[in-house]
Image (cartoon, rainbow, N blue to C red; front, side, top):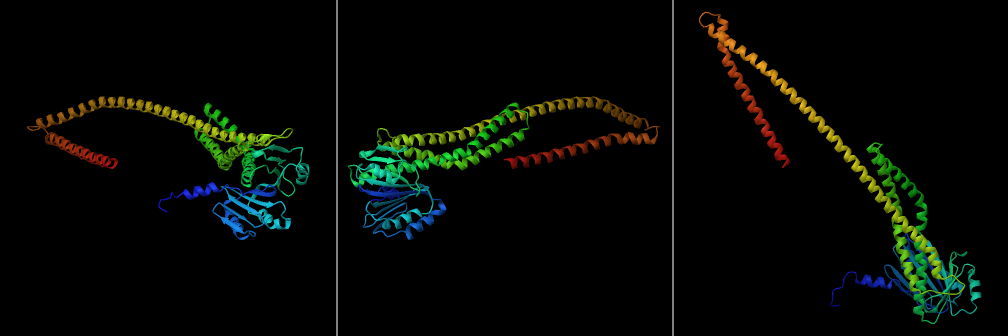
Length: 428
């Protein structure tokens, strides 16, 4: 090979081959079972597929699909999907029951839980149709009958019979085996995806009351936030609880509701591709599918939108509460600033008063110093010796105190400057 392949090229080719159906003769019986397989059951499925299978003359197996057939025209198809597995067995109409049973038991004992199980009888034409319907146990009261691609006609009441299988009766039409297989594959995929889509509806019914209660709690909480009667911390705590409950529900339902939307869309595509034509006096496949699937899928879609809307409402209430808290904090800060301003003004007035009083004190002490110096001068000639000593020491002591205070002042300013420099270095 002279070219370089993209690493996903073979995966893409394999993916396109994944949905290929086996050829279907004009008179045969088809068993198909769809099972949900948990991740921890995949290994058991692989062992069952590899080690427990009955005899096949040809066997092809890939990562997500496989097929086998025998010389007696028994065909087997295995397909692995994201969360499900589809198993199909095709038997010739004239194959004896004992020859079928090992394959049927292998199919029925497969790991996983059955979502849909169907037995399809393909007949050459519609002659003796009443006999076929009676033998298959299809009720005419609730029967769906319509023509689909290539004028194949389909009959079914889509009920589950005693053996656990639903029943479909299909005429072979005037087409080849390959085309007939593709048409029946579309019919089966429509039913399989319909059932998978409907799995989301019970979950909506289960969580619906909880969502109703959650919406009521949120409405009451929003009113309390609007009235601002409760403590902010209490409101925030309760809002966080509501948000947590919502996330639990979204986590529990998210995958299934998303899968429901995807499955319903695929089922609608398969229905459109069948080109269903009505048969007079009978319900068509389109009527049956839309009457059941469309309301359920729309309900699931509305439920998803409802959860998103509640999340948006929680975000809005949270924003409102944040604005209220922020406004309250700003008001408190403004009140504090006004209080500090009043305190500063009061301190300034007290400082002014103290400065006024200090002038009187300074004048008093200055007069005293002058008096000591005058007494010292007068005591030079004939005054007491003590007055002379006091007068002589007055100026040197004043000078000494001035120098001491000046030195302490410079020391304090120097230490403050060094500390400010260290703080500036740390912050930078």
